[in-house]
Length: 455
Image (cartoon, rainbow, N blue to C red; front, side):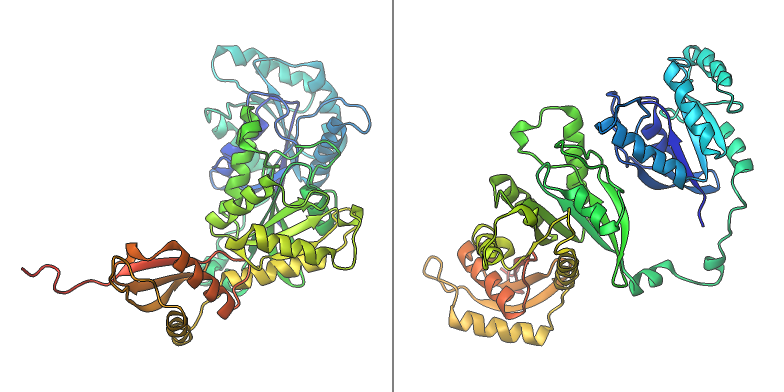
């Protein structure tokens, strides 16, 4: 089992900056504003040849019961329980503060091996604060600068004594290819997106069966796009919780812009996107914008109507929602619409099955022979209109790739084919080969004319 280290400390001491430094990429949001991190985030870290798991946590703050700060503190305490060791960060430029001493007691009570890191120690201004860290009674502090990468060699030396012996590359020597392992049990990447307070984090907690994500009545709690692993009926999923997406005109704070950017990146790297909507507010303009973003990025779409337990429903309520989805979202016609409740767990199995089905459609390949039989029938039943008195000739079609299904039609005068006729072909493709809820890419390409260069 991989060794796990939790990074803890009061707000704005540089925990997320150190996390990003150790994982080698910008995963956690970083800003000068204290309290940016709220949920705990996991990553695979390395320092030299040392490999370990790292957990970024919310800043430790004194708080009142039932407050957001208290729920953030509970997330940090959960990370302390999960970790094998602790990086306790202080700001060496600010020196040792009473809050540092109070939370050092919390770390000490955990009984986990602890390394005190005096961050922001670059230059003369940080040296005095680093010496103050001795007063915590948690051992000799290591002076570092997470932002500039200074002091990491000293941290490596201390950490090497703490970590167990690192395993070698036995799998590589045995000739095991990790890509082969992935192909047998490929992880489905899922992004849960929607407007603020749609219940995304609550839904993921219910799927996991634990309070992994920070939740509450306040809108906009989630900031980072946090990925968690999930197993369902033998299949592996990587589920991303994301920040709520508001209308662009309402986004004015830098931090919210970073959160939105993180959410959009989660959509770009997902296989299937679940658009989670509040059942009490069906298909608002922002929901349609998010669905359009998913289609433009070429991701499979599943629509989840959350808080269904609070909605007054009749016998055909979900059917009416599906009709609305087909009306408002013709570009992903047939996308699954599932009634769920993150609070009670209603409909979660149906939602997961819809994700699996959408993923299968997104990966679908159509046999070339069947594709061209359909093409001949479709163009015979409804030939392309003439342009400038000249008939357009569509010769044949082929599927270029899946993920999403993408097709190329070879023809004459590709730029003269009307958009309405392209939509006709896409809709016919979707119906003929059962491709609901996934974007379909259709490209028209002119065949090379062997006589074009002759005089």
